[in-house]
Structures are given as C-alpha cells and as structure tokens.
Image (cartoon, rainbow, N blue to C red):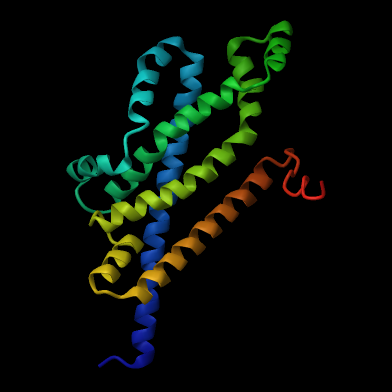
Length: 220
C-alpha cells in the first residue's frame, strides 16, 4: 500500500512527465518548422525556379486549418510523439515561409545596391547583407509562432494523438472536473510565458548588436 508521501511523489512525477512531453513537442516542432521554413524562404527568393515550383503551393496550403491535417498525421505516424510534432510543424511551416519571404522583401534596397556596387556576387549579397538584415526580425516570427505551436499541440493531444496536457484537459472535461481544467489552463499559460521569456533571452544573447527598444515610447 502506498503512503501519502509516495502517492504525492508519484503524482508530481506524472505531472513533470506530462509537462515535459508537451513542451518537448512544442520546441521540437518549432525548431523543425523554423529551420525548414527559413531555408525554403531564402531559397524561394534566391532561385526563381524554386519560387515558381513551391510558392503557389505554400500560398495555397497556408490558410488550411491545422486540424484538417490531423487525419493525415494519424495516418502517416499513428499514435505518439510523431503526429503531434508533425501537427506543430505543418501548422507553423507555411506561415513562417511567407514571413521569411516578407522579411527578405523588406530589406533596405540601399544596402543591396551598395553591395552590388562593391562587386558582391549574389551569394555574397545574401550571406553578408540579406540574411544578417533579416535576423533581428526572425525572433519575432518565432515568438509569434510559439504561441501557435502551443495551441496546435494541445489540440493534437486532446484528440488522442498522444499523452500530454491536452489529454489532461480532455480528461477533466469528461470527468466534469473544473478545478483540473483551470489548473491546466494556468499551467499552460505559465509554460507559454516562460518559453517566450526564454526565446527573448536567447535573442538578446545571439543578436547582441540589436538595440533594446522596449519601453522607449513609454515616456512620450
């Protein structure tokens, strides 16, 4: 027979495992989607052929709801981590591709003209002008899509794709346990807030040359 202390320890362990599973799916999905989307976004603007072959498809699939991909995820990967991660990737990928293209199109044309005047090749212009110019805007894209990743992974888990916080919410709903629902909602909010804070700290360390702009307009 388990003691109260053992039961509490087992409960805390289950909570940590559940939180870790959901957080891992979010971060892995966000990482895969960001790497693929940024690479494809740069390739679309670098190669005309890639743009003609892929951009219409990306634009066509971008408005599709992630929930519509759920049967595809289950058909391809079954039950477990893979379909939930796939759902996160597919929900973020198309939007991040378009955001990357928009970032590239927004690069100051004077910088590109100066690079061309100095004899820079197309590859040098991208590697030394365009990509460094879009770096400060990419963390904003990541942070905005991070919240989308949390929403998608919860939908994927709640429909039985895998265990996690989404499953906890569904269990609380089925057992008419409002306290567990609000506890899970608060926990998800804290995890989202902490993950966003973590991304901002990474942004400050990696993009150390970008000036801090928060709070500049508060005194106006």
